Image 1 (tube, rainbow, N blue to C red):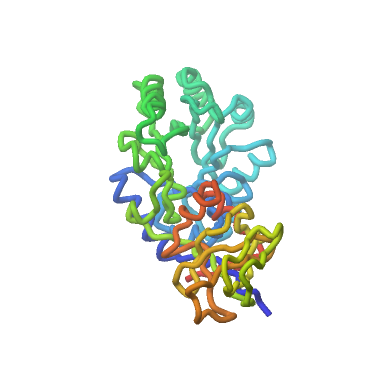
Image 2: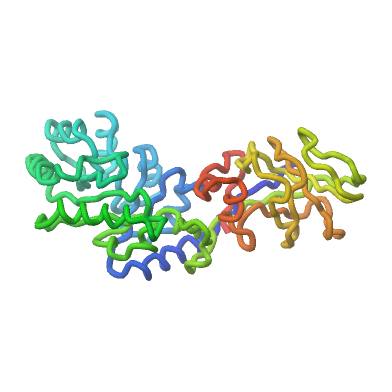
Length: 357
């Protein structure tokens, strides 16, 4: 018998959210970021649902291969570039655009040439200090790219550290540095991630790189996707598999962490941290039982959760329990878990079936 623990993926919501992003970004091209298995939604189904994208962006060559195998023949950007010559050979075979962010990548391309690759994106470090060349090296880097036979004009890009904080001066400083070092180069530019799309319109430039927005989730702390006109694309759900009558004073679950304050019904639902539902969610975390709020009563275990069914006298085994989705934003659950929603959707494990809706 199936556990009926599923992540339902709303393909229409994905396409709708892309349209919302376009409404924010005017004439900017949109590089839809679908790394990490499409943020847990399934990279191949996501690539098909977002077929109106100008290009896709992934982190690894294997992800790029999966997108090609799903039928995407258009532009495809490798965000981390290549790690070795085998990666580069696969990038050539797949016809990828490459982010180049460190000197060994650049020297390898100078040695081997650009045959079958589509474009270089030079990544400048304007303050995040993760990937990228020092921004001040932009003129030298441009000359180096020009020495690569067949490479053509590169695009310039950077990545923001604090764009989710509209009042943080760091993003403006990063934009200012980027503009200073790129002045007069007349190259295409890409700066904005999801948060900058919402908070820093002057960063939109030639191409934006939305990720979490496409999945109907807000990158801004304290807001949810619906606040920005988006629709959640993932609903994580399971079923009640047992209902127990507990007495006042009974203790529930590992560590006896929940004490029943009265005689009550305790529901047991088929999901746990083995499915990606966060173990450290506390008593009182909301779930929806048949569309109405209930709350956790006891620790999340590997395969099961326990739920206070007070006020749910009609609940029966087999009834649906929604962990997040429409009516229960993943942002709310992430906050309860002291996490970010990216972690939750990316963390849903392989034993949870993904179903298209």
